[in-house]
Length: 605
Image (cartoon, rainbow, N blue to C red; front, side, top):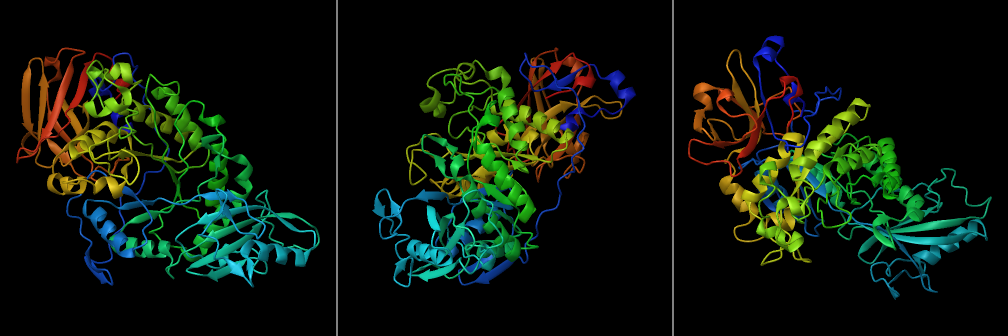
């Protein structure tokens, strides 16, 4: 990040003969740059009260064990008390952001009775939707043909949600309305296939083919998003609900189907109009989440899914004026044809920025085994045994094009470039809180198993210096799986320091080292090299800034400095820098840094 490139002045430049970098030996040091992007706010939402009571019980809103990860994905729950419990747990370990998994728009066919089919059978979710003895499809067709006998319903789509919408969902109330049927509220929308969504509501003068969208809403009598935002207000959190997921290409499931884009556009617009009317001024609505995942690659700009992104994101800007968050995935594997290098991923990052997203939170992909956590001087080491189900028995260099740190470094540089071009985007890290497999799968489907806090600390170490926030996929089931669960491990071990970066930095006339990380108060910094080991207590010989305001840093990250004479370390040697607390808790992942004989003006890392 940019603080690595700052220099103290001409006098200091003359003194500094070497800098610390955390780069592979064949990587050039990047040139210093200055961003014109506005700094993110350093303030967090504030809980309304220290505790509150409702029908689900009494809930504590204090942060008991604040951790480096401050946001989590959650899944929709039928029991609102489950949400309350989850948000209390998440807030207790420092979480201030909730990203909600959502639902997808689906293209469907109907039978002769106008009943919606799923895999050739009547879909029981939509079967109860009837009006005056007709299926909702046939009732819509009848109303259209009363306006013009040549009107017809061309395509049928369905969308399932646990939300309840207001009247702003409808553009033409005379033809569109809610239907109470069974235990559900259904919403009947009639739209033009091209997504134009004509505001004239003229169904008479010209015969047309309309798309019908049938939304199956909540069966609880209350809107789930309103409940979630109210709860977020209590805990001082922000919520990112999911946009409707685009229908997938039947021939290539990892891509969106372009022929459904108009209808998706209309549904997105209607939902966001409803949000804008019902949630105007709600700080707890942090933005929206784009749930269609793509791989970060050099060819991403040609992926038709990005047209979906751009279209939906234009609507978000028009109707909501909140940021869009996306979480693409990485694949660094060398033995697959679609594995990408860090620089190729950086090109994909730029392509995503141009679609209008405000927050890109790439999955670190360690949980799926597609990227490894290792330092440049560990390339020849055997991969973590938990990665072997994905990459086999091999070295990191054989298995991967680069490490997590390499990828986030290149994306951070790409972000700076895009900001200089006038785009405003934040880079977050989505650290995956699971393993490729395990003795006990944590999720209802698949083989993904529990990881541990040590490995999660390592992921934070690798990505933390390059990003503005760290989030994790996901709270349930991966943070609550196993005995002890990750949640329990964090609660027990949250005060352990995590160092994310170190650079050589003089202070006044003293040479020294500056360390960035978490829980650095009263810490001891340890430097180990071929000539020995030196321990320095920050409070005795250095200084600590617990709230650096000049940088785009994640919440909770601090800066510590201690004096150290770097001339005693041979140039080019890899050095270990560790941090520990007075109680002896040491960072589980020491920093690997090295000396370069390059001029200070080309600091990198």
